[in-house]
Amino acid sequence: MKRLQAFKYELMPSGEQTRHMRRFAGARRFVFNKALALQQAHHASGGKFIGYFAMGKHLTAWKQESPWLKESPSQALQQSLKDLDKAWKNFFAKRASFPRPKKKGRGESFRFPQGFKIDQPNSRIFLPKLGWMRYRNSRDILGTVKNITISEAGGKWFASIQTEREVEQPIPVATMAIGIDVGIARFATMSDGSFVAPLCSFKKHEKRLAKYQRRMSRKTRFSKNWHKAKRKVQKVHSRIANARKDFLHKTTSALSKNFRVVAVEDLQVRNMSKSAAGNADKPGKNVAAKSGLNKSILDQGWFEFRRQLQYKLDWNGGILIAVPPQYTSQTCPCCGHVAKENRKTQAKFECVDCGYENHADVVGAMNILARGYRAAACGEDGSGLARKRKTKPASVKQEPAEAAMQEATHV
Image (cartoon, rainbow, N blue to C red; front, side, top):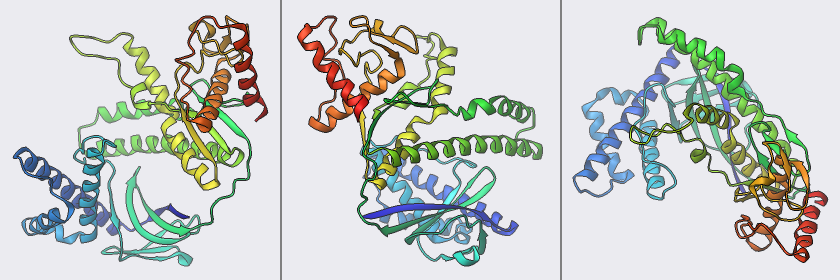
């Protein structure tokens, strides 16, 4: 099987190379925004969609109008048009939102599909119109190099090297299955009763970040002191993001190596973290409380957790199953009774029908695992909606009890 993998390294450019990279990123942003505006104006006038090859002809004309574009590598500008073309296709396929113009200082990057050289023994890389540049060689590059993306983050420049290589079909070593219920008080609670404590990277640095943001707000916009204050804010943001990324990588790597099947909730994080402010006609309720909850949800990184878990399980031969999250913490894993009253508090679960007691997050993880089994076996969603009844016959109560407990404890 083919494996696409990226290897990211920190670059150590000279002052002149840094200035060139900023200019290249600015030219790439200019071409992207100009092509986006042209596409929108063409569509508003009733014209058809302009494809990548047709847009390339406009790029030639733009270079004549703006000669400074010729100083940037042609590959980087062409790749910018390819990125926009892909963004439009994702929008039409309803995989992404409407393409937006790129802003200076956000996601500065450009890409080289060819023309580069990598001298890994000497920890240096050659880039068109930039020359040789040293980088922090932290690990070996595996596979055939396909392209190199240069990006800026937190005042530092990085090279992301995408490779492709043939690997043998992974043979899973682990044989166990687990259900995972993600939360805020507990980042991940397992169906076997164990849990992973949350990192709360943003919460740890929130006061420090607010202090630097206040200092930045008092400076004259775009002055030298304002840029100095901005760099300090960016540094704190980078530290928060790096700590969260490190935590997620370690957690997902451990799970993918120790379990063959992992069942998780199919959470819509974007909808869960929407603002409750409302509008002038319909103002929201408990806006401050919802804002704090949204901040805590986004601080956990649930979407990135599932994304990393997906590809790491694929690499190790495992399976990730996403199940509907409805009523997972209100369904009794012993008798199958579904009621809001089963969850006494945020952490305590006590079934009002059979008296089963456990931690609410553990109960949710057990139900997630049981639904994962049903989804894998016969494609059932296992949402629990059809089973939401107050009473059940005594003969029926024992079957879900034995099945759910056996699945959650013996696997």
